Amino acid sequence: RRPLGTEGARELMERVKTRLGLGEKASEWKKVTAEDVKHAGGGTLLLQHDNSVYRLLAAAYPEKQYRAEAVRTKVPKRYWKDVQVRRAFMAEVAKQLGIEKPEDWLKVSRKKFVELGGEGVLKEHNKSLRLAVAELVDGAAPYAPKERVEYATAREFFRAAAQTFGVTKTEDWRRVRNADIVALPGGSRFLRAHGNSMLLALQAAFPEQDISLHCMRRVPRGHWEELRNQREAVDEVAARHGIKEPRDWRKLKYRDMVREGLSVVLNKYGNSVFRMLQAVYPEKDLQEHECREHVMRHYWDSAENRAKFLTRLKAAHTIESTSDWQKITVHDIARAGGQGLLQRYGGVGGLIQDCANVDVSLFELRQAIPGSFWETDENVIAAVKSIGKALQVRGPRDWLRISKEQVAAHKGQGLLRNVGLPQALEITYPEYRVLWQEMRAPDFKARRAVQRSMAVAV
Image 1: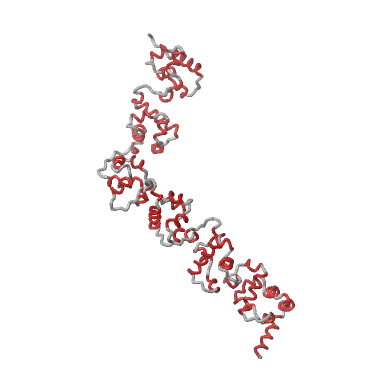
Image 2: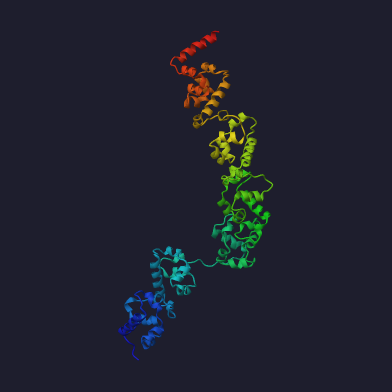
């Protein structure tokens, strides 16, 4: 039998294409089977091309230069043996993935390469994508996989693994999975020798190091149910971060605890760091404002929590009398964990008045008086009476002998600046309004100087 020419093969395949309603894409030919070609009257022609639909397509459309993996789900036997075919496939994959430089191949996963039809290529290169790239792509030889190294002991192996995964301290092993170890040459052998337990393998390799369960990504089932194990893990974290006092825990945020491997323990306490600390250290009278920089919502709504805070603050600063509160600053409150209280009361004075049950005006409590203090008559009256008491003023008329300098020397700068002495006295003693109006007279200073001279003479 004489094989038909290109025209006959093309006519046949066009007929198959029409019967099956195929599009113009090369991948559409993957739907065509040998039976479809036979039904279209191409049995003889198919037989003359070794019963290969691909070879028949190549004969029908020589100008399109179809590749077998592009038009068939299964390629002919020994198809991938041809190195030029493999090179052409690599060039096509590079085009699809936008690969311009040899090092860009390092970003391509083996799974993606197989999805694009490269499984046959991998079989010709010991199932290694990096080996295939090194042998088929120009300039990619430096990226060939290194020769497998066999390690004699577990110690040698895990030292090399530590360099590979950037392990510099014991807790860094938590980042390394069993699958990562198995992927290394000889890794599965050393894990199997210790019951597939990386902890046991590491303990055998480095007996001089204190490698505990808490350094591992996985622990035995039920391990975290015991309070003793939880406490040991928290103690290790405290030792690593130099935590000695309750307030030292403030420097560790929730995400830091998770990085330290305490996520399972935190989950048992509603993901609350403070509740976890309370549970593992029941003998310590821990307060949330001491241990955490941000307390739970509504924490300061509790009068008991506010009272405990003030009690500890008084003990820390040896506050014994009302005047001792003057030395307490905003920084002292914040350092003790009372930022929320400062926001609640708008400052130190209001906090002390309410929480410490101090029956003294804010003017007497605080050295620095905020500008908003002078907006209410009640505060102005309290300030005038406090200054008058300090200057031994026995009655309203005694204020006529008091100078502004004397008032300023007794924390009255804000009073003079925001209210003015005559106005403050008029608010405090409204029944002596005429007297205070006299203080506003231009010659009041001169008359008061004469009065002082007479008083001195007497």
